[in-house]
Image (cartoon, rainbow, N blue to C red; front, side, top):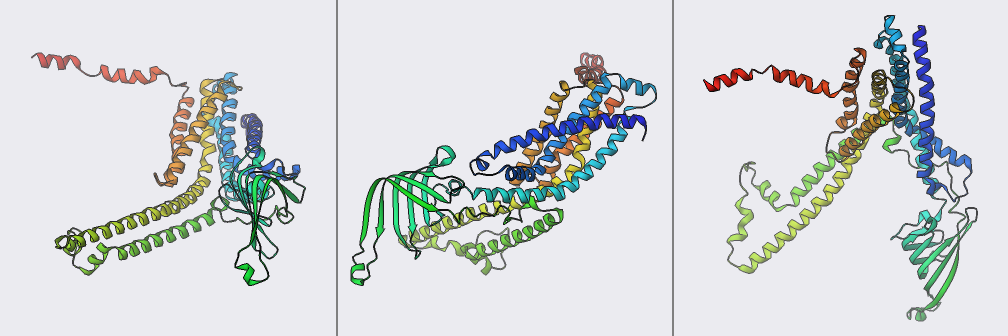
Length: 486
């Protein structure tokens, strides 16, 4: 490696490591604040929180690294151009393409490394972070209570209408079914509101209920007394319950129950999952189509008339009821037909929703698969764009390069984001959606590299209207006018 390559590589790597570290730190802090509600107030030590952030960090690398490469290349080559170091290189016969050679090889190796990183490290981090997050949610009883449904906690089954307040510990419209030792539900408690009070290290949960009633069904020993269905009712303004959470808080944070999510799979596993899902999806469509046709009156008649072609009209047998003389039979047949049509439409809508979810799951697998390949090229293309822009604008530091980097990266990021969202509902093909941003970057990086190598500078308005004006001047307007007058 020549001295000039070592100099450029050292300058670039210094900025790349610095920018990557700062950006990664910012994104990790953002992640911490994003999950602060799930991590705070549970008595977790710093090691558990740090472990979660470390497991979550690999999925941030495909977002942080391209931004770091773009900004570092802009700063490096902008500084070289600003300090006239490029002019000195060109005077010795070293072109911009030759100056980019060493870093181009480095980014090819970096792209290959990112491919293996996305195929091995990111799925492992997703597996660990997702399961750790699920296990941490079990440590907080308030998180285990969902609104509008019954939730089993310890020896009670509780349902609340709404939750509010700090950590959602205040409850409204509480219904509790309390189990006895023989697993019988003999006690029902209803209250207007409630409050959950507990410490993360306390094995008991203190539940305070306000303005309610406690109903208990009594079971006498004699059968005659049981026929009377005796029970008790007690009204209260404030009622305290202590719920044993010894088993509830006995959570293994290392437990991994979810291991088959598409974000946790490698390329080989994703291909197998896509093939399996596609086969199951096609089989389910075929079975539903066959069953729906068998249940349809039109389908039954068509199957009887085997000689009917697709272009033929509906058989007359289906419309026999029209020529009937009795009006009440016509009305009855009309009602039955309408009911059957409504049932068929309802079945079609329900199945369409299932098919949509099935197709979306397949598309998510395909998007995740192609994303691993796009990381091979993204860093290299953004490097070419950043290096070319830096040589054109001739500005280093954190001023204009930072603004340009953010604008270009956000454009690239949101193009990919919107196209992938469109691919989830099958609006566009997942392959095209995943590669769209990369395909847009490729010609853009080529054009900028050519302009920077030819010292053409940035694109101005003159570069746009001059070719158009030159083309217009070539049109023989005078000859056309002369022909009109003659």
